[in-house]
Image 1 (cartoon, rainbow, N blue to C red):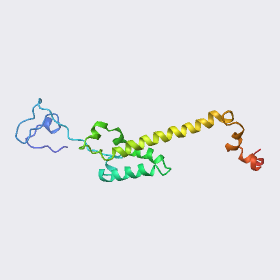
Image 2: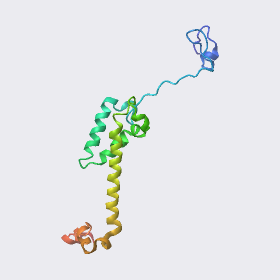
Image 3: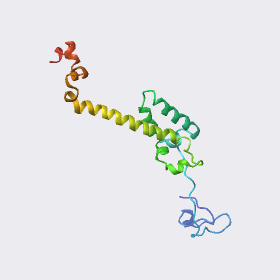
Image 4: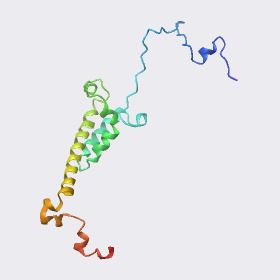
Amino acid sequence: MEARVAGVPEDEESGLLPRTSAAGRRPSAGSARRAPPQPVWATVDGPLGLPLEEAEGHARRFFLWGFACLPFLWAINCCYFWPVLRSPAAAAASSSSAFSRIRPYVVRSAIGFTIFSVVLLTWAATFIIGGERLFGPGWNDLVMYNVADKLGISGFMG
């Protein structure tokens, strides 16, 4: 059996009726209530992620280490800081935005990874589509699948 609060109707106790305010009157239906501001998280793991103060350092490190022949760190930077990347650019340009110091590193990481991906896919497509027709007789020196034949170690496979 539930414990009842003395003097409180059952409907109000269950939340079906609005409660009276501290001043003793009910909130008017015409007054607009503002929702409390949503917390701002710079990382995809929300409250478990980094605080904004540490997030800038991590975003900067991921961005700079991406130049050290580790461009997949740019992709990780974009994925980890996805809320920053998805935030509107106009809001990020204002000085009051929480992401204004992190966003440049994340956007530049996205641009760097896009350029890296285009170059890598173009390079791979050149070899896949072009092949011997594109490279001529030098193709046999470029491909790796005939190394076993050149070294004479392919006899055990067949």
